[in-house]
Length: 340
Image (cartoon, rainbow, N blue to C red):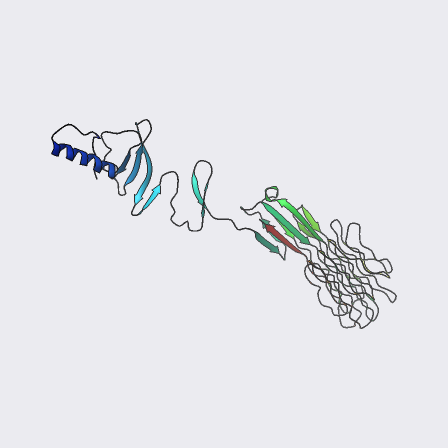
């Protein structure tokens, strides 16, 4: 540690040499000492050793004050005002609000939240875009002991893309239930699948229940849509509500579904297929099992005469005519939220 007056005076050789060495020592040690150098110039360095840890300071351009650059601790320097402490910040990144630098955790590239039951969605602190996909519940198959029954329609799929900033801080999520099965002792049409909602922003409606034939014919339930549920049609009148999915089967093939659910089959038909919505359930006429329709992204429809629940999300249940077998229940809805 050394400080000097920055001037070499005329004198005898040994004295001049000592004076030169003193100034060089001050230069090399950055004028270190427990008090400020007496003689200062703009931009000179000074290592202040008066505290527990040395502090590196630099003279300002006007040569009237010291600027603190950082604190020296062992083999590291904590720079003042430019880099906050790195302790405990492994894996984080440095950011700034335009005035102060700080550490922040690296946000994930994307997040996925799946609702299989009703609940509350809370907007995350990180992210820019939200993709929300909803499926309504599938309708259940009709049932008529020893006669004919139609398959249930598939639930609709609705998908929307949002700026995350446009969404509320939280939203209530409702997952539509699949249409309830018709019990083995009952002759009745199937039940409509429930509506799934994301707050007040989106709704995906359920598929219609399959018809029961009353000894003649039975029509499949219509697929659900974005504005209304699929219908449970009268015999010989297979259809779905406006802006819903594919029509239920009658003497024609049941309507296929794209975003809407697929129609259920009549007593002689398999369920229709779908792309996003749920597949339709198979119809029942005899002991033959008629398959439900497949869906690429939704749930598959249920097979007739088995009484098993259709696949989630939104598959239509199969019809039943077997004495001890209930109709197939519709598959429940679903909600998936992607954030990135």
